[in-house]
Image 1: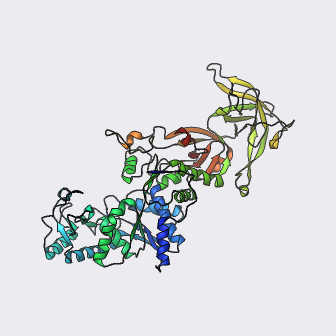
Image 2: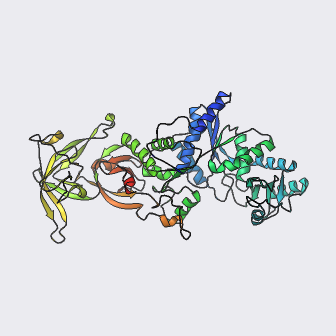
Image 3: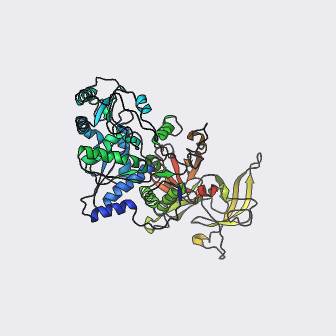
Length: 558
């Protein structure tokens, strides 16, 4: 697999866009695409790429894109997933032409099953799933015909109607296409069209107890909706001949399937089955856990729709599988938040500083820039008092030569405010730990100057002790420690690569303006990272999620 980095050059038309432009140039009518998720889980970043492609093509070429739920398995599907999928698509900035469900077409699909039986192209098989699997053959050996393959049309019609009527138990019978048990494409070896499932459906209730398989529902649903370009990921390429076979046998609108490479992201699991396991077994705190690759998790973490769309654009549309560096996604998030996020000051690991020549009763309001990338964002006032907190890492008692932050006898600038000099280090008498610094400030150094024109290289952030707002900071990193979590020893699973430090909870002290931040609002905490206020916040305390670090510290660790 090829590795893609964030330094990829500007792209030309991808191969799907070339196909669409050829279609339009050849007199093709209105472009019609669709996004067809199964509502059996929450959408993830891989789905986001497909959403951007299908909806983006329709928007770019003046066409339409439908949202169609592939709801053909009532055991795994739920209205919760339907609602979450619709929310995610709208949040990403897209809207659908029509909202459709495969279940809308159950009657038509049943009729087409009857039509195939009448044409001698389908039959009811009494074999179990295990027997069917055992007689399908291998890539090098043909399969074996079912003993029920030559049933009469009349008997097949009767049995299929009785299957629909609920006379038979689950697993006792299926409807299969009659094609070729020696076909080199294993999917043509009499594929199953319908199976019996006695379960209530989230839309049709108990009306149906037989449900179509993906291969029998997908192409025909595309045809009903007159989809011109049915865009799937590469694993469905082997299904395309069968997709075409059903359309040809039924003589319906000739939708056509095209395949592109799915998104594979380092340090990430994309399997919905495995993501569901993480949720059900409590390894994460729900589908919207900010460590999850789900769209809802990324939204909660503070990722923006613009960043995800930009990421999808950078990844591009390829014809072969590739692995995308997680750093590219984080780069896209930083780039967007750098433009859009307002700046605030907060301290994660506080060290108290007393400015000894600052009046004990005084508060000076320091004017701070909200976003240097956006003048329209304006400014705000932050109170400066005699006692402040700085980051403990911004002080070193015995610093190396190129340490430009605070140290005994040396000066730094408080962000947006004054120069301060460290005069005295106060220690805890019992532990020897540094607990406080005594400093003096230069009253003439506001605005970047000083009383005698001197300059310093170090600038550090701060918050005032009496007005500091305490909050919980959730510092997220990759959920897995291994680049490919599925690359496991025989006695291991992807769960063995879970990162025990994927979430570190810390106390944080913030400037007072953050007390009124809205849930979901994203900020750059200067010199720390980008943070988003979490929905777990209450009147008694705020919670902020770290969206992404300011620099690619993750990349440096590799």
